[in-house]
Image 1 (cartoon, each protein chain N blue to C red):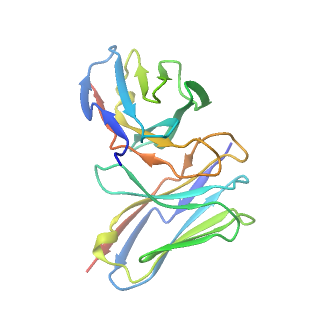
Image 2 (image 1 turned 135 degrees about the vertical axis):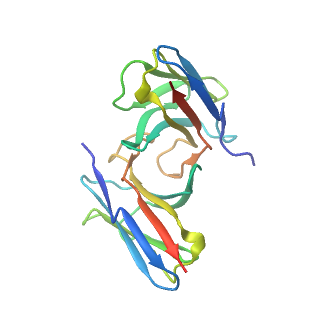
Length: 113
Length: 114
């Protein structure tokens, strides 16, 4: 059974500092997703990582994937208040047709001035 | 282009009733998948439909069912509602081929069971 673990579960950030969220998964997969969710809202797609060594960046967020270590990281550079949200990683089973995402438990991020 | 549309956005039901939720995917997307989000269990996969066929299924009881129509719109049904079915139900659409990857989520249908 595929398991996805995120840590930390909660991250209190200071504006201007750098932080990392970790996502570990238990079995081989070649697709990893990062989503953002604001309170009471839906999931916003941030990144899709499709291969080992993939790195994607958008603004202050950068995600990377190490399929050998079964680890993805979401790095936040110079945090700002607008980044306060819950971040989820999710993984598809290996070689599965279609989509059947297993989500991590989420990391709640609060950026304080 | 229009995003994923879910209706209704909010609904309240009582135990034992049934409910039907609807999802209209992004135009051109053939895959629709459903997820349940609760504070206790987090986000859990329910099922995925592609070209009117259920392609993947999660570990939910048979009270949870779904279908997809020829225009790719999908519905999910929960029968004999229980208090624990109170949740945010999210629908996601994609092209459905493995290499495209990205899933787009709707705003969700928030179900409260009393």
